[in-house]
Image (cartoon, rainbow, N blue to C red; front, side, top):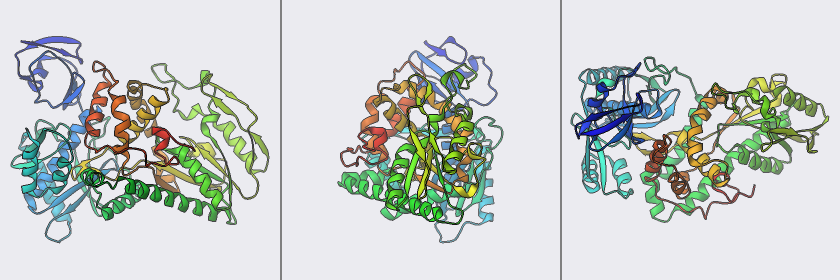
Length: 554
């Protein structure tokens, strides 16, 4: 017999060796408002078919958890690809990226014809039939060579290329009926769990909609995101031209010694975009109703500060004289900071910024007055006056950077034509393979872990523990306004994960295995293993990436 400690009930029960998590679940009595989808075993993600042969700690998870949503979404993507293959044997579906609270998918029927609404109706009905049949997702662990041979015979070159560049002895793949597929994370035990989803025509593809993270019995609300989609399409188009749609392609290019050139191209593309933005601002500055203030925002670790500095340089090249400050300098004193329900400070709350004071200073600057702007002392938690004076004269433009810069309440007394709004985002345009897209939030989490650890601000465990609060605040205070931007800038980097791997792996290994944060650390280490590591020696000191890995001179 083995002992299983259940985190959900804080109790221990004994089971025969080899008992599955699915069979253990009924023995633990706890509130389950939504179906249990997966679990953490010793703080590592596992499917419900996992068999325990030794004493273990188990935490059962539903859709409201990150891992639960991941398991559900991966299984739903497999369901879609299975339905397409059954109906159109020569078809190919590519799960591009999450957008508009769903997954954007490109579909090639394989016969040269376009997908029609009639086709979509058939796909939806077949998916529903597969759910009703409650078919099992079966997992197979085989030698890497065997998996490569299997997917080669099926013509799945994306998976073959990926697996050839990953140094594993054994790999897992799954089957649904007679259809095999590869997923880097666990799947549900069967299709019967996939009760809530929808499939609609969207842009030049499909949108696979998923349940709401807070109320899984409902679909997540649809939000049109044309500017976000446009910037993703722009990045993806370049990747496709370069033949770098998936991680396997990037790994192959690095193995051929092409990494230095890819770094140069990535830097050139970002600089080109910054130049275009600077020129657009310059043209608006010289209109009859000129732009006077540039508002720059983005989520945590998107690269706002470095972008602001690089934009300033390009504005100077246009003949303008930028002056700038951060909304952080207008933080209220720490004792006046709003608090979360647990009593900790809510540093991402809009009222953390003294927005009335800030807007008054901007109005004074626009009226030609000299203003002494504050500087926030993060050690003492007090706003200080250190003699920093600004004056907005002819030929000057004011840059204001911060997470609340696009919140309309911050500048509601300023005329709209005087404002130019920029949203910095991290839209990862490459995927692991055609069915495994990369979560954008993981990109920023890795950046934050590396930066905070190297600066001695937070340990990896602390950064991971605080990430859910950061994400909740972003949804409430930042992403709500992204589509209001005049322009979006994508701060991701084609070789970013390959470069971050060398910095992040050792840091992630410092997270103790016996703490809840280890599940994310383990997941991120497993994810980074897919990337061929690339040295940062060719990354220039002005790169956005340098603000996270160190070595920036901006």
